[in-house]
Figure (cartoon, helix red, strand yellow):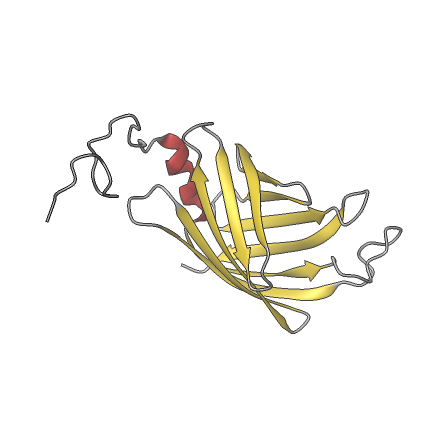
Amino acid sequence: MATSTTGDSPTDRSDQSMSAPERDTRHDALAVFLGRWRATGQAYGNPRQQADDPKAAAIDWTSTHTARWHSGDFFLVQDERATTGGAPFDTLGIMAVDQDSSRYVLRTFENHGFYREYNVTVGGRVWTISGPTERARIEFSSDGRTQTHTWEWRPQDRWLPLCDRTAVRED
């Protein structure tokens, strides 16, 4: 049996053309999301939503979500289990620092089959999530125990409210 020495193995680090990522303060900043959270609010985005009164067909939103570090503490894994209007709406998200661009990124996967990629910025206690058809503003309270979410979506030619919710840390 031949042994590879050319870097064919996923664990072979003989190819030094790619340097290993280094954890830094940008990763530390993601820790604000860690823990178990319970959220309540309203969801508006649905086929009946009218641009002239976009919050008229609001339905209740309840959820729990947890955020933890993936081993190595480079990736934040968020698992949200929500109910909107009595139906499940579950999202798995992975937030990270893109080593090439030095920007925050978020990738989400949800139980209806959608996969989305977002750019994320932070300014003080406010995190902004931006994608081509959805965007959000998440503000943390000064004690870090409350998140206020305001999501919008762009179903056609304008941004409309998608959901508003408040999450409170349970742990």
